[in-house]
Length: 301
Image (cartoon, rainbow, N blue to C red; front, side, top):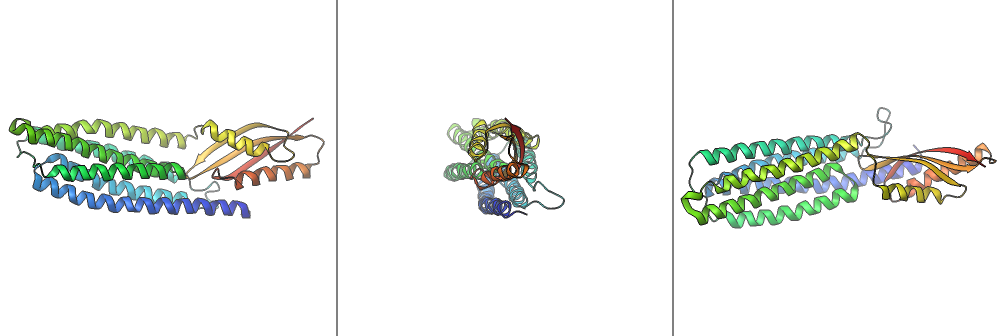
C-alpha cells in the first residue's frame, strides 16, 4: 500500500475512532434517560413517558449500530474489499432507519392504548423531567449532527436524527401532559394524543435517513462544491493542461475519485505517468477526505 494512501487511511481510521467515541457517549446518555423516563412514566402515571422510555432503549441499539458502522467503515482496504469498508456506513444507517420506524410503531401503539384505556391523570412532577430531557437531547442531537457532517458519517448523522426524534417525542409529551394536568379528568388522554402526533415526525425522520443512505449506496452525485475543489486541486498540478471527466463517490467516511487529465501529447509516457501520479498525490494530500484516486491521462496538442 503506498505511503500516502496509508496515511489517508490512518486519517479515516482516526475519524472513525472520534465518531465511535462520540456515539458511545450517546449510548450511555440514552441508557440514563431510559431509566429516568420509565421511572417518571410509572410513578407519574403517563403512557407518553413510558413510550418515550421505550424509544430511548431502541435508541441504545441504534447508537450501537452506528458505533459498529463507523468502526467497520474506518477499516482500510483488504484483499476482499479493495475499495475499503465504507459500505458499512449506509447499511448501519438503513438499520437505524428501520429502528426509527419500529419506535414510531411502538409509540403509536402505546399512545392508542393510552387513549382507549382509562388511566390516572399524569403527574405535574414529570414536566421538569421532560424539560431537562428536551434540552439535553436537543443539545446532543446538534452535537451529533455537527460531528456527522465534520467526518462525513451517514451513520452518525442517522444517530443525530434519532436523538432529535427523541427530543421531539419528549417535547410532545410535555405539551400533552401539561394539557392533561391543566385540563383535568376530561383531558387525561392528551399526553397520549401528543405522543401519537410525534409519531408522524419520527416517520418523516426515518424516511430522510433511508433516502440519504440509499443515495450513498447508489453512488449519488456529491455536492458540486466538492467536485469544484477536486478539479481545482488537480488542475493546479504542473503539466495538467485541462480536465475532462471527474467522478466522485462517497464511501463511508471518505471519497473515491475517478478523474481524466489532459496533458501535452508530445510528452513521453513516463512523463505523463509522473503527472498522473502527482495529481493522485495532490488529491490524497488534500483535506477533502479522499482515500483513493484513479487518474486517466488524455494526450492533447
